[in-house]
Image (cartoon, rainbow, N blue to C red):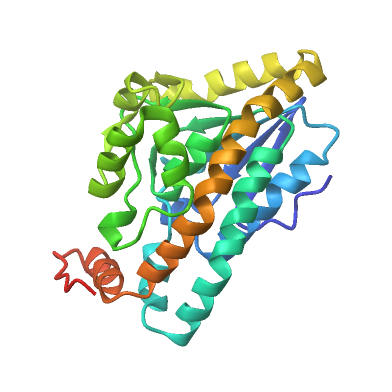
Length: 267
């Protein structure tokens, strides 16, 4: 399998393990439309790669992923192109998370730095997660005037319960990697330099175990996650797209880019 067609994702095979790197380090691995599209496709390619028995997902540079690309949000806000974009997002988001859950190989998130918004959701949908102790972690959709629609409302309540999930999602709370581990959001919190080596250690262990025992165990647990995703995702993404066309989202994105306090109007 050749991965040279990917521009914003780098894939390196290390023995039986594929290391998948979000590769926009100059923009904190933020995900614009083209990067999002690649993140939909990569899982299908990896699923068909018979040389890959485990996958490690990480970020280039010092950040795992800053989530959505704020600069792209500012450029889209209030435009016809922006409205057309919102019409495409629900199907694209569903494909991405369905593809993640359908990958037969174990996915380990090596969270080398901050993971916020969609970046945090990607971590939580991975099978095993290792995060840097001092990394910032949280779903910050509401801070930019958006519903936490792209998977956050499905996965957070499963991990920490509805009450705490609602507080974290509604307030856009940010915690450290160490706090995320204590709350059972992720599996391991380690010094940053130990994150990728630990992920590789576990990935190599899984890659040498009985293949169908590992894959079908993952499949069995993911049936539960798929049911939750199917229950919630269409509605939550639809509400996110509505909020994407609001004045408050445009104002939040511009204020973030201009490093000022937003002036919300409630519409």
